[in-house]
Amino acid sequence: MSVKESELIDWICTHSKLDPATVPLGPGDDTAMVMCGSEKLLVTADQVLDGVHFILTEHGPEAAGRKAMSRNLSDVAAMAALPIGAVSTVAMPKGLSRQDAEALFRGMRTAADPFHCPMVGGDIGAWSGPLALSVTVFARPAGIKPVLRSGAKPGDAICVTGNFGGAWKSKRHINFLPRINEARILACRHELHSMIDVSDGLAWDMEHICKASGMGAEIIADHIPIHREAKADKAPGAALNAALNNGEDYELLFTLPASHAEELLKSQPLSVKISCIGNIVEGKGIAMVQPDGKKEELKPVGWDHQT
Image (cartoon, rainbow, N blue to C red; front, top):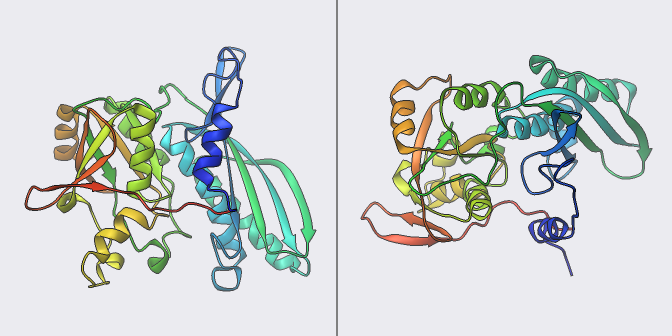
């Protein structure tokens, strides 16, 4: 019987006995938080696998390394934090050339260097399986309180950066810029109550915020910004479904007071467009508001690893 990733994570969270004095934030958010003396250290780890998150023969080793690092930096962005450094472990397939191995690490550095996140250690191995990379990034709040998933409040506006759907078709899943700078600007200028990076699908990650905050949400179908690659599919409902469930968009999904959202939408302070797609409500679950005003239950079916 296969194990659902989300169920396993829930089980791990319920069985984690952590001292809040030393671990203020454990499993269940975009990063964990541990205390180093009086300083908060944020930690996140992620992996990418050939055949699952990238295709080595199609995308190449440099792109694989870039994605491995960028996925972790996107988690740091979700907390409005700044990276300090990273470590990586790599299981290389036997026979991988020196040139490809160097390209792999060059890709990781290409992603990390713009955010002053040096590679400070790791481990390299070889085996008979496909390429597997794991990256751990350490980060710091740097003057901004980390934004958690659990702070959404009734009446909050739900906002997103960028567009959704078609990430694999457009290759955005392999070549994206983590929204670290954008998250810092948003958190510095506005009262963000919750935030997450959208990797598992817009609907799925919206549900993460709802569950963590003990809230419900209403999403307005016409307000979801859909990427042109998703719109290319003319089948009824296909573009919207792709935007809601395909994942790998690596945009920011956040909530804030409605008055702040109005100001934010008018000013548009980022290089990427911000859209308001709904609001937080009392209760549970997510409702999709159709153009005719009818509300339908939205059941997320985004990315979920099977092991």
